[in-house]
Image (cartoon, rainbow, N blue to C red; front, side, top):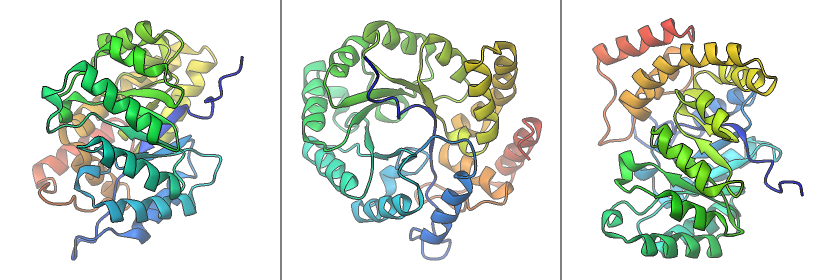
Length: 300
């Protein structure tokens, strides 16, 4: 039986959100210009309002407008995923419905962070099932304990993956053993995405269908080649590319998050710009580090 969700895979990128450096408002012209440039690369789909997109710092109305802007630029054959994580179940459902109306093909939902550490596995299960029931579009579970402080166990993921409206899992834990546990627990019921640009090759070996990679914003051509090599069985070439890209993930994305990705985009002549407060731009020493790492990875 063919996989009805085969459209959701490959290289997806969690786009940054440009802000006007004077007013601090969202900069829609810069946002759309970046998207048009990324559309000229081997990117399969786009993700809005993740940690790289500073989603936690955006208002609901801003996110709805950005989803509209994105859908007006991104053709229908390329998936558009919107981050719909929220503190309450009803808020997550509301966001999912708003983003679906704006043209999102799926939503990415992290656990509620504020009360998350106090929630039992049963409470987390009920939260996700309610969101999946209420969302007009498929749900991707988002495991990112670095920011939520919530660890989603493999057994829970396997149970949730059986819901017909849960399309997959993005694991940004950086723990390849955890990723392997998800793979084993879900068997063929999950579409697994890795969120760590240093682990794509290993994740593909374990059965990942793709990656949602912030470094893909800076190296879409390189990751496109890595996918091509892996699918064609050219594993040595794929592994060599992964080794070259891994330090850039660790020293830019993992070390500095959205701030580092934006600084790197500035170096490439794209619209990076400042993050939204309370985040602060990189200092001169940090920007020099980003420049050095980008040069070593042959990205500039």
